Image (cartoon, rainbow, N blue to C red):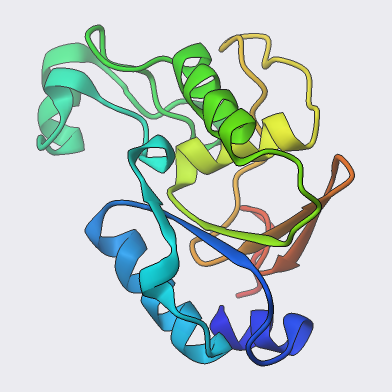
Length: 168
């Protein structure tokens, strides 16, 4: 991912790095920053970019939760929210507050975060309509490690691919 970004942005690009304040996202961001030659300690680390909050289902395996509550994986790689967890409109509201706080300065931003929440963020930034079943804009699922470029409300998969389009 870092090499792909460096190929597009060059070495030591002037960017703002935003990171979900969780272990895996921090590790990924540090590798990207190292490849780009930027200071990842200067990044905006925020819980606003966290993954969907699964409430009392957090820390439990899918099989365990499904044995008690039925299927939690929905069509198109979405998750059924836990009764005491975060639903898609709540994710959208959290991310919209983050977008409003970051502002529209014309700078280049790199955001390192998680699957479900990133789909909602990408949906918001691309101006997608609310999903008919979930009430929030949700972009298509991408494979792990993909990079989406969103500019002027238009999304392009810059690196990686949408789920279902991976090459064997």
